[in-house]
Length: 110
Image 1: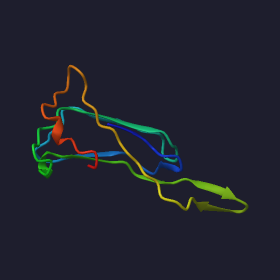
Image 2 (image 1 turned 90 degrees about the vertical axis):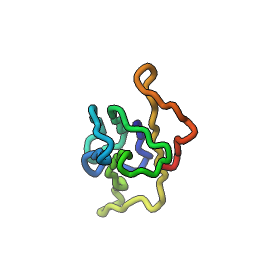
Image 3 (image 1 turned 180 degrees about the vertical axis):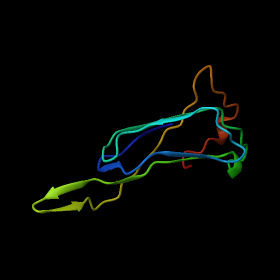
Image 4 (image 1 turned 45 degrees about the vertical axis):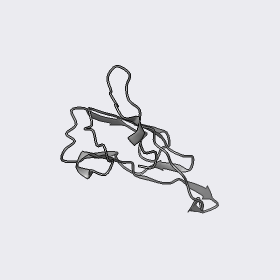
């Protein structure tokens, strides 16, 4: 999973990976920018079980990336940016390693 943080957002803590009880991960490693920095978060996960419906929470893996608005100094005080950010992560299979036999159940909004 790769997530380039949008401009104006910085890391606010450590990335956490929470697998469902039916999704034991054999590999689970994430790299992220330092707290207070912007950049790209990358996580490598082991095999994730098949979920034909996309609704079985026990087979889902939740990756939480805590961010906050960057602060910009203006005179003697700081203020947060006053607009919304959109953020999209990308999940990809690894050629020769990953197997997704049904690409019709890949949901970009999850």
